[in-house]
Amino acid sequence: MTESVISLRGVRADLGSRPVLRGIDLTVRRGEVVALLGANGSGKSTAVRSIIGQVQTGAGEIRLFGTDRGRFRDWHRVGYVPQRTTAAGGVPATVTEVVASGRLSRARFGVLRKADHAAVRRALELVGMADRAKDSVDALSGGQHQRVLIARALACEPELLIMDEPMAGVDLASQEVLAHTLREQVAQGTTVLLVLHELGPLEPLIDRAVVLRDGCVLHDGPPPKAVGQHALPGHDHVHPHAPAGAEPIRTGLLS
Image (cartoon, rainbow, N blue to C red; front, side, top):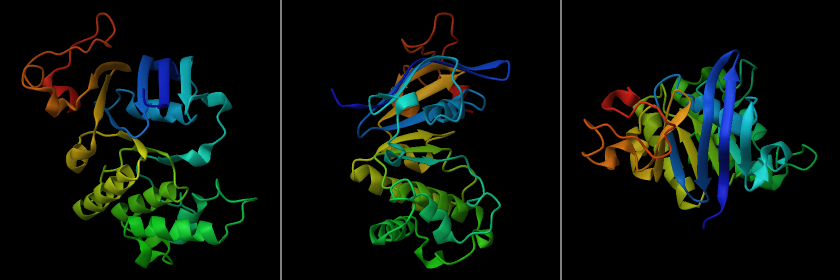
C-alpha cells in the first residue's frame, strides 16, 4: 500500500472543558489530496492544528511520515497555511521577507544561500506575486495576503502541504491563482490536506473527502457531490467509521 503521510488513530482533543475531537481516525497517503469538510465547529481546524502540534491532544496517536509526532523533527517536509490572517502578523515586512521565513527550516544555521533565495523566488512566481516582492505586506489585499502565506509554505518545497480554509474570504482572481498553484503542486506529487467549507474550484483536485460533525468522522470517501443520489442529497448516509449513535449525514451538513 502507498505510504501513510498522516495517520491519526483515536485522537481526542478538548478546548477548555469542551470536547472538540472525539476519537477521530484519519489517514492521508502519499500523493493524495484529501479535503476535510464539515460545518463550523465540527473540529476541522482543531484536527489539522493537532497534526502540526499546535493543539494538545488528550488521547490517541498522530504519526507523520511514519514517525510519532512527538519525535518528528523533519518539519521542512511539511508546509502549513493557517486560516486567513495578515501575512506578517502585524510586523512590518516585505513580501520577500515573509516568504523567505518559510525557507528557514531548510537553511543551514539560519543563513539563506543561493538555492534558498531561488526557492523563494519560485514560490512567489507560483502564486503570482513576483512583481510585489519588494512591497510591504501592509499594502496587500486580503487575497494577496493569502497568496503570500501559501508562498511561504511552498518556499520550503514541502512533501506535505496542509492548508486551513485557503479560499475563505478570497476574491475570485486569487481563488483561480490558488487553484492553479495547487494543481502545480499535485502534479509534482505533493500530498495535500485541505480544510474546506466547500469544495469550490478545488473540487476536481480532491481524491477523497473526510466529513466531520461534532468531532467525529461521519464520511470518508468520495467528495459528497460524487457520493451519488442514493446517499447525498436527500438520503441519510452513515459511513462505517461513524461512532455508534451518531447522526446520519444529511443534505445540510456542509451549510
